[in-house]
Amino acid sequence: MAIIDVVVPQLSESISEATLLEWKFKVGASVSQDETLIEVETDKVVLEVPSPASGVITEIIEGDGSTVTSGQLLAKIDTEATAAASAPAAAPAAAPAAAAPAAASKGDVASPAASVILAEKGLNASDVAGSGRDGRVTKADAQAASAKPAAAAAPVAVPLNLEGRPEQRVPMTRLRARIAERLLQSQQENAILTTFNEVDMSAVIALRNQYKDKFEKEHGVKLGFMSFFVKAAVAALKRYPILNASVDGTDIIYHGYFDIGIAVSSPRGLVVPILRNADQLSLADIEKAIADFGARARDGKLGLEDLTGGTFSISNGGVFGSMMSTPIINPPQSAILGVHATKERPVAINGKVEIRPINYLAMSYDHRIIDGREAVLGLVAMKEALEDPQRLLLDI
Image (tube, rainbow, N blue to C red; front, side):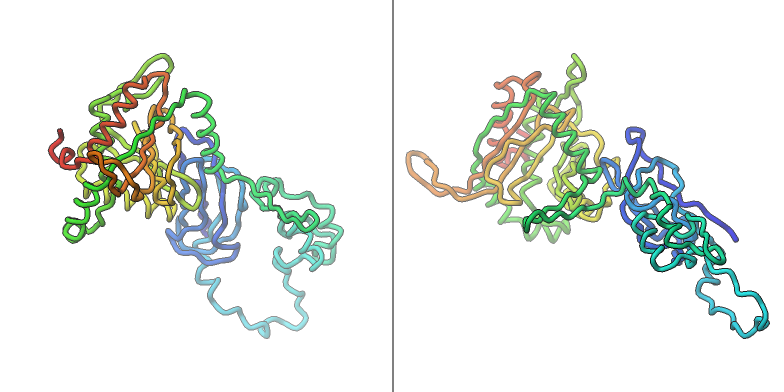
């Protein structure tokens, strides 16, 4: 027998603990090397725990919902049990008639009634000393056993039905709890103010319609609007560096690079992967990176390095139909741009009413270090760049 330990992967220094989600295999199941056994959720990302070797799971130490730390033992795998697990059992006729019955495996020595009680307590028969014949766990043994402590920490949904008015209490995931904590922190620690403007998207739409087919054929990715918003934001941050700065105690840190956080919705909550050195990226580079972020966010494949840092963020509520919002700053950044759905609206152009595709921009900023002048002028710079996108290509 060769036993291999399955342990929690190394977590970031900033992460002290994580939560186990759901085991994909049970005890006795055969697994292959590198096959995902369970996922571990931190307050930033979800990490997969792969099988370190092929074999059979002989023991699961920590159950679903348990709180764990780096390197903690999760399960054990017998690497020599694979063949035995799939091989046919030996014929019972080979045993002498008078031979004593083989001892039942520990997982089968509980009575049906005891098994139900043990399952409710999160215990296995192997966790309880049986007082019945041949060590069988009786109903009384199961009732006297203490519930497994880890079971109380598991995020179990509790359905309620109050006079025909159903409710369900579900614990927050670790990621959702962290999101809530950071948003509340941002509201409490920043002097948040939001400035608004509207942008005529006619020029961007015309440019996109003219080149979108050639762009996709050349670069293998669709030409969206987010790359234009990123370019416009970078142009404004260059002109007004305070928008790209952050606060550290009583110091202001001016960043000489442009790492733009792109807010992405995932099944487990909002994440903000970082588009690093955005000023050095082409429209195609930006579109490819954003598409990759979206795919990996949906699959839970974003790593800690994808979510660390950032000097400015962009949130696009327009993909869900939002018309206006006041985005919340992502600490320790000092500003965030919110873009929304582009809709045709009547606007005054040279004394005449025309229908134009309009997008409302909203920029929230930390008023402790950013004055209204810089905030307003920065948003105007973004507006001007979007209304005349050739300026982005000429860097003027």
